[in-house]
Length: 326
Ligand SMILES: NC(=O)c1ccc[n+]([C@@H]2O[C@H](COP(=O)([O-])OP(=O)(O)OC[C@H]3O[C@@H](n4cnc5c(N)ncnc54)[C@H](OP(=O)(O)O)[C@@H]3O)[C@@H](O)[C@H]2O)c1
Image (cartoon, rainbow, N blue to C red):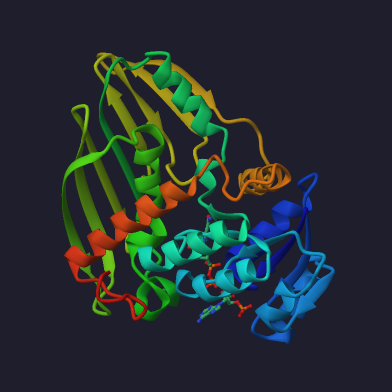
């Protein structure tokens, strides 16, 4: 599978390094708003083709998958253009600015029969299967509580603090905490309460969301873009609990029995960076003629975008691209 990277930035570089070591996937091209930047990126990461606009990359007939690695504010236009041109896409999280954009992209994907997925890497990593098996095997008894925290001190980054770049902790970090809850307990939300601290620029800096899920399960998530985080996830049941060291990139999974006794400690299989799994999943899905990866179905992408819309609405966090219904 030949990949074209849109946006010669931070995550684009990490992906280029990862794919260089991944069998069956190659980076063929990079597209940037500036040709000089694309050339520098291509030189640094050994990418064969460099384009000075996103559209030129989308017109390259040899590209099988377009990887959209711009700020969330700039995912929509290029993804719509790519799908319109019949190009499969893997779009960084958060998938879009809001659910209205998400619906438009997913509708176009269906209409054109073109694959599109969201690059929430935790959805594709082996840790997911390991944790699900522990739960299914009854290791913690009946699930009662699930919590996830993710925080980094990154408010100096323009894309985190500026509303026109869809800034805020929720779309950048909270999205992982929500995914953590949804991956292990996708039960319907019966009740939701939240608190948020806004930045001077009007985006959410720190937030806490509490949800009652059907089946008598309480979910709590916290995210912040202005402090260091311990970033753990905990799934607690009637017979014990599971601690996941990092909800954004799990490495160590601990199983505790009643009384806080450590019963087992599992580590995830060795990997390149952890980003390779999402690309391998795209390759498999596209090979099977699917328009969505089973690991992160379109219905789930939309559910999470709608949830984040409703939280932002409650907090008064608005982006220029939000319509009156957002
Ligand atoms: N999965 C992960 O672990 C992970 C980690 C970090 C970020 N991300 C996601 O990846 C996306 C990009 O994040 P990043 O940290 O890589 O961002 P970044 O370095 O700030 O920006 C990425 C690129 O986006 C392009 N871009 C297009 N319009 C822009 C604008 N108006 N302002 C700034 N840049 C613009 C630029 O590329 P050109 O100048 O070359 O056009 C820029 O280099 C976000 O959606 C983020 O959530 C994911």
